[in-house]
Amino acid sequence: MRQLLAFMRKELLEQFRTGKLVLLLICFSLFGIMNPAIAKLTPWMMEMMSQQLAESGMQITAVEVDALTSWSQYFKNMPMALIIFLLLFSGIFTTEYQKGTLINVVTKGMKRGRIFASKMVVMLAVWTLGCLICYGITFAYNAYFWDNSVAHHVFFAAVCFYLFGMWLISVLGMASVFCNSSGTVMLALGAAFGVSYLLGLFPVLKEYVPSYLLQSAGMLIGNEEAASYLPAVFVAMALFATESIISVLVFNKKNL
Amino acid sequence: MNILEISHVSKSFGSNKVIHDLSFSVPEHAVFGFIGKNGAGKTTTMKMTLGLLKADVGDIFVNGEQVTFGQNHTNRFIGYLPDVPEFYGFMTPMEYLRLCGEITGMPAAQIKKKSAELLELVGLKEAKKRIRSFSRGMKQRLGIAQALLNSPRLLICDEPTSALDPLGRKEILDILHSVKEHTTVLFSTHILSDVERICDRIAFLHEGSIALKGTLEEIRTMRRSENIVVEFLKPEDAAWFVGLCEGSVQTQTMLVTVCDSNGNAMHKVMQILLQNKISVARIERLEPTLEDLFLEVTGT
Image (cartoon, rainbow over all chains, first blue to last red; front, side, top):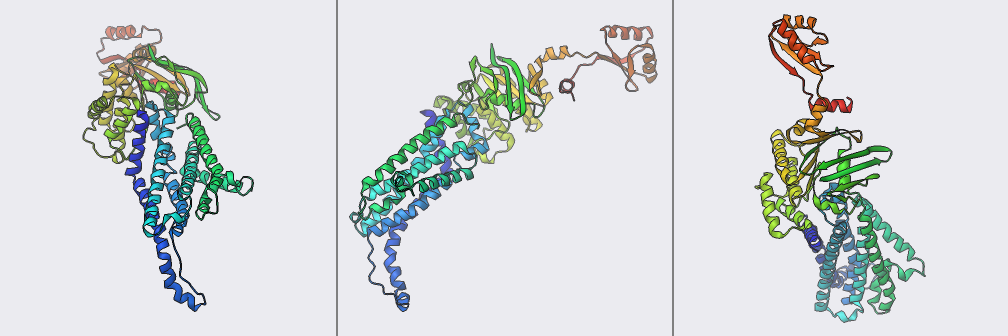
């Protein structure tokens, strides 16, 4: 336990002192502010352009925006936040392999599984915090400007996206155990998403692939049941667990 | 008792056989010099001892326990200084030692005390900045401090002096010598003067196996030179002597080397000198330097 805590503190210190943590938190906050801001600005922008549009023969009637507009922005922006997150963390293992910094740690008697676990916990903690910040800011502004109750299953839909991120974090971990450069880790992430997406094209498998969770915004307008996302949720969680276990087993025998 | 035992270990990388049936042991409280030219397999042997590389065949025991590849329990007995030590650049030396201490399970108070002691020992007491800005020599010193932090039974240093200036080298060697009482030191090098200065046992590694091993004394006696050198005061004495003494060669105007093949050359030389009343500057049995041995062993 002490090893785990010590190494987690090192990881957090690293993310903090290299500026990654601050950068990510700023990103998540900005996205959080952007969602309601875009929704709020839409009518104003439409009005600005209405003159032009009227000249070209388009008539703009009053544009209605509400919490739903803002929430749909949330689900459009979060994938970008996830990509930035994965890019920043793609080297969390590989830079240590390249520099050889883990050799010292391992020869000090650090259990290899704990190195893996510390890095995963720190990534998950930052991801959780980021999602909470973005969700919290959007939720608060929406509640202030409009009414959050017009959108259905908002929290569950956000959780779905959060779990999708968690799955990709476990893919990142597993790819990092097999690959030695951050470039190949990113490629592996792309490939994993690609496979999930392609499998999702088969109607039979559609609801069982993790990438199905990306469509969770469909629940907001209320014509989809939350239960239809449960299979994908379970698959994502099961993959997370299996990938983590495989990663630790392989990491135990990795040439550092 | 032997702190380290390597028995019949072989290792290849692809078709390149790096270690070939290597066996040797290191007794406790020795300073063991592991000598070999670049690429002889020194680092590979050390990495196998640490469980960082898998031996193809053979067993390695540290403090009586077998070394396993990957997750290796015997690492708790070992302090390791890699050839190019790399640390977390965003940390200060004190923070790094704290991390190391916590990993090895030392109590917090002891970590603090020992870190301060070691940083003073290696001369980094005043270095409060982050490791990123350290020079190679400073990293080497920090490397020694972290390797000694948990008072290991076996300290493995991979060419600890190769990147240092003469003063730094002397300091590092002094440190290695001073920890001998509590710790067995195994260090690899190709700087032979370092070996002569602090080692009590050595092993020459050549093409993946031990070419020569033993205590420094044993090795010197084993290879005692068969040559006697006589330095004369006058060149004509030298020439005169060569004419009288069988098996002697004049190497320089004043120097004559006598080959001692049957062990009585010393008496013969003295007898000739006495009978002919020749005074000499010196008579000396040539001691083989480690360098000669190294060259002889490596066949270059």
